[in-house]
Image 1: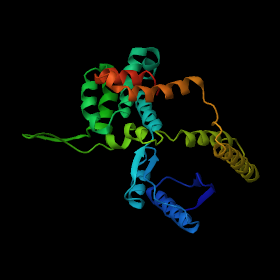
Image 2: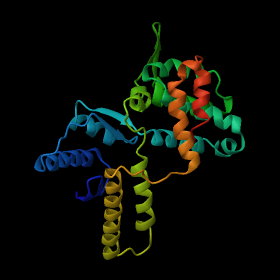
Image 3: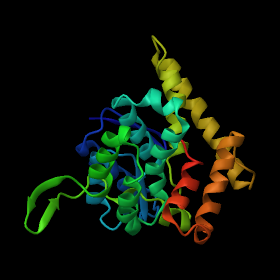
Image 4: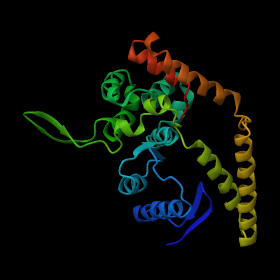
Length: 266
């Protein structure tokens, strides 16, 4: 096993096992101690990889592990695709909007999500029942284990609401996604995906990326605005916090979720 680190926010490695993530966090702690850096993260945002989540819990026992909203939405989209509903989703805006209500649940307090889902489920299209039931068992209530006189017993969901709700994170100023990291990944996919990539070319790309990040960091230190985003994305990102802050104006849960769903995409 080998780890390659080209700068503080990126690490190149050979797999995604829990053992590898554990080694990663141990090495990061060692580096932090060597340079006398603070190493008490309060929140760690990961994608939906249990290996990363479990390794985080073992190494940083007091940290709050949150799931990136972008990845939550992407997993819903993949389920829509694997269920054969992608064409219907693209062609029918009402159908699409209903399914986006599932990801809109992430903008509710974690403790309110189970009851909100139960109400939302009553309004979901019958054609989307496979997606709805998958979301319920994976992200909300868990799988049925058995039925008894006391009622149905469920196993805990794989990703409980407290893990993927971004409501509290937004109030506390934490990011809801890893999109800055995802943008970097897409740049590397473009470069590394080219045929016959030489070691020399790869090293040169490392250096170019390092210079780009250093320039970006200096701009942030000077208080300059970050690189502009597409207008539609920026508009949606601005509307969502406003909808959350004005939640009292939409006392009915479905009205609130609908407003959020209009401003997100899968």
